[in-house]
Amino acid sequence: MFDIGWSEMMVVAVLTLLIMGPKELPNTLRTVSKWVRKAKGLAREFQSGVDDVIRESDLQDARKALEGANSESIRKTVEDVIDPTQALTKTSQEVKDGVEAITKEDKEDHNPFASVQKPLADTPSTKTEPEKAPETVQSEAVQVDNTTSSKSS
Image (cartoon, rainbow, N blue to C red; front, side):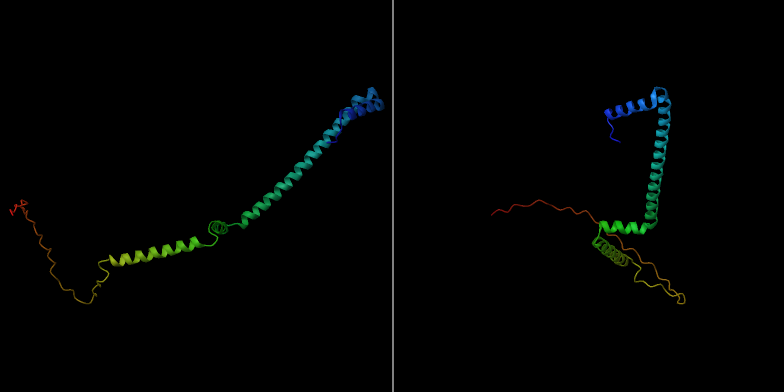
């Protein structure tokens, strides 16, 4: 800290002993140690105050950043990072449109009642006989003779 070596400390100790004398030296050392403790305490308090100010300013900056960032801006940022040219978004939209068109056509093709119109309530409905189910053809077991006759030539 002060870059004082053992030799300089020895010189200071000898000078203090000569100036103060051996009788006053213990009281002087106590007084000096109190002042050093107070100075260290003030330095520690000052450092903690500076740290608090830095921490609060960082928290305020972080709070402002969080307030400025909502879910839409975060989503847009992620989309920009993943798909900057929006090619995937366009392709996925085309696929969705194609699937919807195919599904719509498929529903129209397989709807047996799509072409049948409902009769109006004012027109009398005529009773029709229900269609008879076609008679089932019973297949008879046919035996085939698989024996071949050999022709003589």
